[in-house]
Image (cartoon, rainbow, N blue to C red; front, side, top):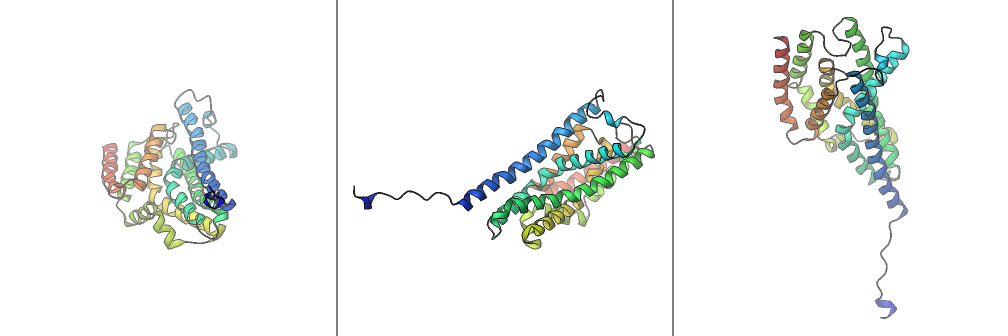
Length: 266
């Protein structure tokens, strides 16, 4: 066979293509690690909370809520919100990464996606601060038990009814639409650069907060550290945002939440 007939070897991936492929794994891996680490703290604490309370949740057994204990409570909320909300934010993060990867800023995909995630988590960190203050206020009013669930069925029923009614509001539906359509969200609000990624993550976090704040307050009904309640709310939020029936299912679930609230009241 002459040299002219020998097929040329296939060109290997360029250094840029290799970098982008590595970024895809780094972005996805960072998301998985963040979720796993969050639940790795939540699960042992929740189990100990309903057990001996001598392990990772022992710090909650205090009569003096000083700066250290309030900081730990705030950190607990931050980690719990990250573990509960990041799974449903994964589609937006991955779609954003895919778009940036094909843009002129493709070499900075990882940095911009981390900025997006940072903006998103900033919103839920702010919510965690509000939830921390709210929890201590409710405990002061004796509306929460030491196990951090509703001590008064009327209070729990009222929260459930409010959350159920909120499922039917136009604001809820508008926020849910953006959460369910991350491509549409990115198209309408696109910004370039790392600052743009942070802005998009922050804005997406605001829409997510608008969609889910009432559901997160239900932690005060079933128990802030009730592992089954936390898992149920996490799955509910995920299905509402990614399942084909999520939009209509959210309205049906509103009736169920209201019915549960009425059962509490009665």
